[in-house]
Image (tube, rainbow over all chains, first blue to last red; front, side):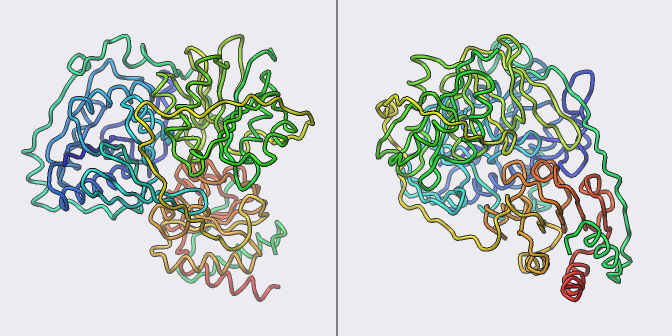
Length: 261
Length: 320
């Protein structure tokens, strides 16, 4: 079985997000960027599938050269080889372009299963996986919390608004996973050493058959025309609790003030 | 400029149109002629309700294939409907199924998309949507594409309004995807949720990853019980399976505007703040003084939620 996982390199979501007022884009500092934590769940699910059924896990990343750091982390977890689509012309790509780029890689790799996070932890649109499935005319199983492959059929449990749904589909299939799927493994020292030697196949847009006018800013239908800072009027009163729990007095006083007690 | 044809994608919740789709009919009416697409297996009184909320036409596909939600037949049927007579814009609510349908339709039609919009307008023929970026930035985003333009709108961006009226029904047949219906629903399980409805609550107590482990979520529930509050959660612990999705407050969860919001062990990632940023009074308890949640808070306590919550619950109880 061949499993393709999508892996994104994103600004650390635990740090405040900053926007460059000139380019109106999210500031992406490679030194403060990481493999999207959401993608680690997809990688874990992919590794488990291959451990059970045999085969290989391949990752695909679209992002700047610096995204190699994120790819190596995926490899340290156990991904065997990676495809890295990187090209200055891709800067400013929208969700549709990203989906087209990744779909081109899928066509070439012909995986049995494609696994993505339900959404990235920087833009949170969740549009790329479904768009890929539409482009590839492949079944899409989204918000999945368990995967069971049997021969050429996959059975999955997926979250719905007030519960869950069990579905089956024929392979090949595109799956988006939530964090309930499995706890991601921490890369071992051996894994990290091996990752350094694993192959990353770096390609520009020409290599995947995308023209410059269809890529990046030039090809984007979705464009940011203005970016504003929204004033937060809050005057935060910050109190340090010394471990005694004495700050409870302050909270109770505040709750009374706003008539919650 | 009230001259655009705007189609609102609608799912059925129980035996009524999903409330978020009714919100979008308000946006659609502001932009021009509001229409609704309703694909389901038992339309009940939905057409009447959609008409009362301002839909002039309901494109109704009543077919057993829509009994359990699968994206493919929805997209095949919708793609045919909008290819024959493209509306200017299709609005999708912020629900899981709507995201599935919109994303797949975007790939199928090769259309650009805007997700997470909080406002939608037209400047001539140019669509302008407002989208939040992080806790303190918002962007104007345009979509330069052939109609129909595809936009997903966040919860509570518009208020549902009963304006009276009735909708004409355009009955359409279900379209089987070219490759057949490859996804089968085996079982659908509804999970009961306890306690107060988050979206209606005037006080909410929410917990996040900072609580350490699932068992500690009880501390949040205990405080909520004393404050007569609803219980919420961050995406991190919903994804980790501590509590059901129905608890989730945030961009991909519920949008709430309570009088008081208590965030315990929540760092305040953009995902979460997008769902609670309009709360009137915010109390945050977190042991990291740099946590972004403190920017949103009126009262911030830098400390251990596991120590503070039980004491607070006890004090609130004794104050009553």
